[in-house]
Length: 353
Image 1 (cartoon, rainbow, N blue to C red):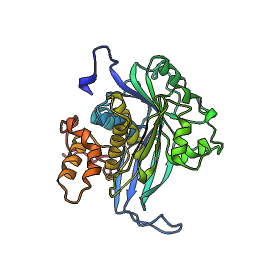
Image 2 (cartoon, rainbow, N blue to C red):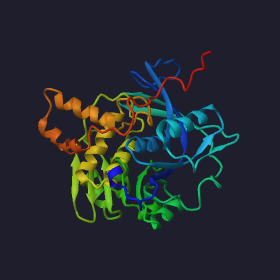
Image 3 (tube, rainbow, N blue to C red):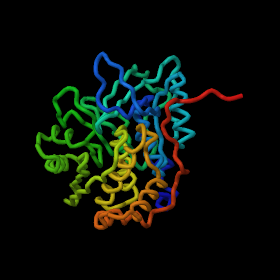
C-alpha cells in the first residue's frame, strides 16, 4: 500500500467504530456442552474481540487503521487497549476509557467447525468528546449495519468521499427488510453471508441474492462458507466467483471480519475483482487455523509463508494455485514482524522479581 499512497491522501486508510469485547475462546471440544455436565476444553485463548477483530485484520495487512471505541476501566480494557495500540499500531486517538464501566466479555466455544457464544456487557455511555461530530478523513470505512439504526457518521464519511464497506449481522426482528438499512445507500460494497443475503432478497440461491443486491449497491459480495465467495459489480456487470481454500479449522471466530479486511485491502490497492475475492478468502482461511478472532488475523509474512509452502508441496492442484499467482509481485515483503502476537490462555502474568 505504501507505493500507492500520495501526499494528498488522508493519514488514515480505514476508519471504523464499534464495541470492543474481551474474547475468551475454548477449542478442542468434541461436542456442544451438555446441561448438568462439566466439559473440558483441550485449548483456550483470550484476545480483543468485537470490532477489534476487523481493526486488527486491517492493520496486519498494512492499512493505517483508526478505531473509535469505548474501553472498560478494568484489566480487560487495559489489556485490549495495549494489544491494539502498542501490539498492532492501531490509532486509538478517537477512543477513550470509560471510568467505572466494565469491558464486555464473550466466551466462545468452538466445536465441529462451528462455534457457540455467550456474551455479557452493558452499553457504554455515548462517546461524546471522543468521537468527533464528523469522522476523520479516510480512504475507506467499514460499517456494520443494524436494522432500524442509521449511523450519522456513515453519511458524513460518504459525503467526504470515504469509500464505505459494510457487513450486517443477524436480523433479530425477523423482518429482513432492506429498507430498514438506510445506510446501505451510502455503501460502495455490501458483504453479507449467504444466509443473510438470501433472507434480505427473498431468494433461495446466494448467487441470485448477490445479483439482486447489486441493484441496491455498486458492489455485492456474498460469502458462501466452504464454497468460497461470489460477487457482482453493478457498474460493469462483471461477476466473479472464487472457491474456498480447504484448511483444518481450529476456531472460526472473526473469519468474516478477516474476509472483509482482505477485500478492503485489495480494493484500495486497485486489484481486479476476482483477485480481491481470492485474497479475502485466503486471509480468512489462514485465520481459522489459529485461536481467537483478532489475534488470529494473518499478516503479509503469513501469506508469504503459505505461498512458499504450497508451491513446494507435492500433489497440489497447479491450476488452482494459479488463481493466486498475482501474489508473486507482492511477496515476500512482510509489513509486520514475525511471529505475530497470538491469543494466549491468560491476559497476563505477574512480573517476576
